[in-house]
Length: 170
Image: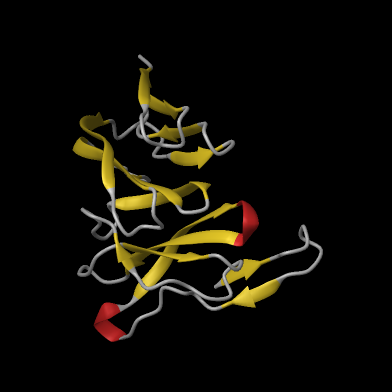
């Protein structure tokens, strides 16, 4: 279930999960992102072990949604974070990984509401089972954003998500 406010939180309206689906093709909203002007994007993950991750976008505060747009490489529990740098510019990344062993970190960018995607970051990391599994992806304005991909790396963009620089911690 999704709740939205268009008046700064004074009142709220309940919206149905836009990801939907039926039986073996059900998807759940796993992330939401917003940008100025009523732009909203939702990341939809398959509920069962099959299916692909996709995004839906809205230009009217979630009243209506675009057709599904598949995120390349998106399978269940792989791509879990979404952010919007500005209306139409989306970034989707791996997130919430826990456990131990190698993981391929991935961040993809779309400048056209999810119609086309370009890889921005792809790399392997070694997960530590004792480290916190928290991850993060967001923009502080239309140009500057940050992605915490694992317990050691923080990535920063200053151009709306097209190029990312890594800062590693010991």
